[in-house]
Image 1: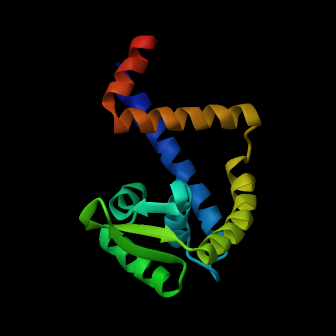
Image 2: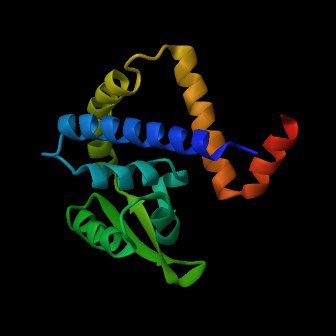
Length: 157
């Protein structure tokens, strides 16, 4: 069993690092093109097959509320960055797809944003540490999403 003090200290450290990195990234983000929240939405859509995603799956992947995502998607659709269509497998659902113009905009912003990510996320870490950080974050995310993953990892140690 994990010591509570160690777990809380690790969380506080992770949280402080995340806030510091996010502030640095927000300070350099090219907001004249799209907002950081819009980028997050487009990032999630871009990683989906065919750059299409069910709205309910998108809502699970972002930190902003469902009504905020819906309003944002309406604005992005008005700018022809995304399209919205009924989900053929769920009459109440919506499919959100990135347009070619939207993907070009996303890519342009992403290339600029990647420079800031590299500068801020890699600050003080070497490649081996970044790989370890990626693995630790993935394992934590998976264990929270599926507690049985955490149990199987505990059994291995």
